[in-house]
Amino acid sequence: MGGDEISVDDPGADDVRELLERHLKFANSHSPPEDVHALDAGALLDPAVLFFSYRRDGEVLAVGALKQIDGGHAELKSMHTALAARGQGIGRAMVEHLLGAARERGFRRVSLETGSMPAFAPARELYASAGFTPCGPFGDYRPSRNSTFMTLALDGPAPQPEQDRR
Image 1 (cartoon, rainbow, N blue to C red):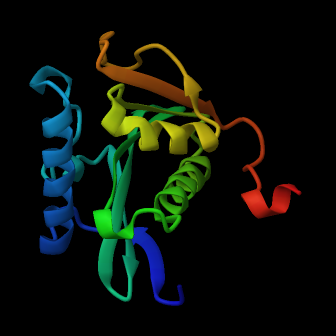
Image 2 (image 1 turned 60 degrees about the vertical axis):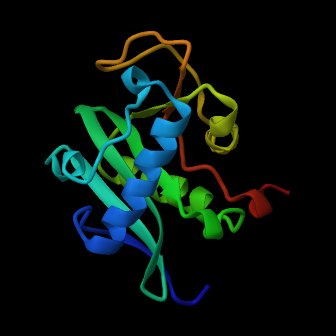
């Protein structure tokens, strides 16, 4: 994976916007409209949002963002990995990168909302394996049977990669 890079990116770039549109299409196909909380490219330009892409040899394979809720709390937003790139550890790398960026910026907690439907099970499993635990609604969210809310306290040191835990 010599050509792999996660870096700050422009959500308005053509290739990034295309992946974000696939993300929104996925969310809209599995969630009722009132429970689609995915951000489009325009919303990701908000100054409270830090947006990243994962590229391999220049090709965008995944996106993810951190949105500041308050001085100590951020939300993980717009996580999406291209279908052809799934199962390669790219989603995990993006989550770890976002958590590292949150720690660097002094956030003490990162939370997220994802769907509770079967289509979102892989996302929930990824977040749980990264240490996120279920929580109640946060920020402007309201309780919904279609949403799963998860949170992770960043008080301790960064978790070690799986291969280092032996």
